[in-house]
Amino acid sequence: MEFQAADDRNHPILLTPGKMNGNFRYLDHTADAKFQAFGRTLEEAFSNAALATASLMWDVESVEKRTQRKVQVRGRDLEQLLLHFLEEVIYAFETESFHLAAVEGTKIEEDEDGAYRLEAFFLGDDRPSGYPLHGEVKAITYNEMKIQRNDPITVQVVVDI
Amino acid sequence: MEIRKMSEFIWEIPKHGNMRVPAVLYASAKLLESVKRDMTLEQAKNVACLPGIQRMSYVMPDAHQGYGFPIGGVAAFDLEEGIISPGGVGYDINCGVRLLRTDFTEEDITAKRKELLAEIFKEVPAGVGKGGITKLSRDVLMDILTRGAEWAVENGYGSREDLLMTEEGGRMKDADPRFVSHRALERGIPQLGTLGAGNHFLEIQKVSDIYDPVVARAFGIDAVGQILVMIHCGSRGLGHQVASDYIEKMENAFGTKGLPDRELIYAPIRSSLGEQYYQSMCAAVNYAFANRQMIAHWVRNVFAKVTGSSRGMRQVYDVCHNVAKLETHPIDGQMRQVCIHRKGATRSFGPGHPEIPEIYRAYGQPVIIPGSMGTASYILVGTEEAEALSFSSTAHGAGRVMSRHEALRRFRGEQIRDELQKKGIELQSTSWKGVAEEAAAAYKDVDEVVRVSHEVGIGRLVARVVPVGVMKG
Image 1 (cartoon, rainbow over the protein chains, first blue to last red):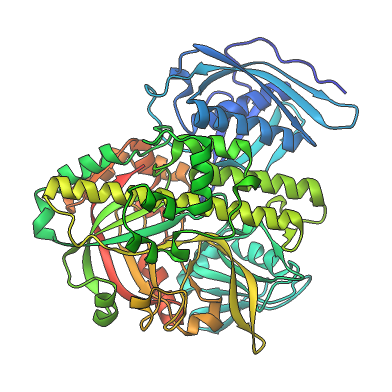
Image 2 (image 1 turned 45 degrees about the vertical axis):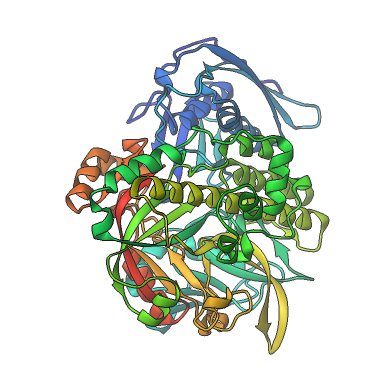
């Protein structure tokens, strides 16, 4: 099975009514952070989840799109694929000060063995200072993780902060 | 789920379903209510189902929902039939607390408080992404992972005496950094010597109450008004990555079928994967010990610079509250080595235990319980009763009751700063949003948590301290 590639849109539209921050919204979680991200395609929902993760640490909208990083991850199932993809946001930031601003060209494909591959481009800025940080994401977790393939496609993630 | 009241502060979930042992919670009726609002007890029950668990699945008074194991969970596993679980330690491996005493009184530093804090803020890199001071090579990092705080002391950060006043002497000997992934190392390199964000903090505190003057004096706490320094942080991205890596490796090896919670994944302690996780976790523990050792050293330097002296700034103790260890405990009348998981729980060895520094051995191990930002913290002492009650463990902090999201809706960081200032507490932070998220009202009442610990007898009250200066990551 091959998913339809996401559009090359820089400014995703609001897909779900209600109180939202762009294409994702935060939900209450006692100790950590929980969010839902939405998309018309799985690619869009995953990309918005990456922006939701980054938005826990800095103001995504204020970050200049100076550099581009190619991201490639694999997952035994969609949950693991999502976890690995979101971990890239933390990894790029902690090791190279890369502040994510946007995700483009996300493609998800299923292998012959039933595993998944994801490719995307992170746009952002890797200058170490200049963006105020308001939090830290320690790890992406499987806790309450949900990938719902309805309309819009919704992914729910709890991250350890 | 049946919760049986055993006494005013002891609640038991009797063995049922797949539980191999009962679960027990130490809490007041008030704390029990907040515990019941989330999945804490369900998670304690899941832990009670794991192979090789000994005696009980214990839950400390500050417990709340975690991943896999609850935060505030204590469980010991048999070394032959038992398991080890990254979810039983947590993502922030060796998150812990270090306490320094000083010869200063409140009067000595009131005028210099602001300057001290500003200087500490400059010297100790806080917040996320700021990066550590030392640019590390991979070889040096491997050395740190092997030798922990010993490495720091040998490289000029603090003294040998600090090591004696640290759990495990600041080094877990079973560490093997070869099992730590390249990715974890990469995350560890820029962050050594940093506090991190979230609930981590560094506080200048004053003693507000002394409950047990004899033990307090033994710990170096002599009088009300005395100044102390508390450092609360962990193994940063390196530890987080070790946890993530081994959750995944164990999933790949054993699958997640039948697990009530994907993060409850475990490996037999005697399997090669179980041993590799243990050795990697020990390496992350060592990173955190080195981290706190370096930060404590910089704090002493700042005191020396600003006040002209860092005399008397002796380390009271350093405890880890997210860890798995091999310890010997009496089980069914025999002394047996077990793998004990303390996730959001502090070791509390009683008097006479050989692991306690000699100068404290007659009294028990110092237990350091940090409150939430800007509230009281406590110094307790381990007890003999704790052995039978909780494998010598007690609480680790306040425990959240309100989501960060909710806290952001209700509080503003600047407002919290102003309120703290009115109470005579200076605050430095990189982020007002971060301050609002850590508002005291978002946490359980730490006074209630330590009262339960004291009443049950798993850790007894020695002294209470309140902040005069707070640096929040």
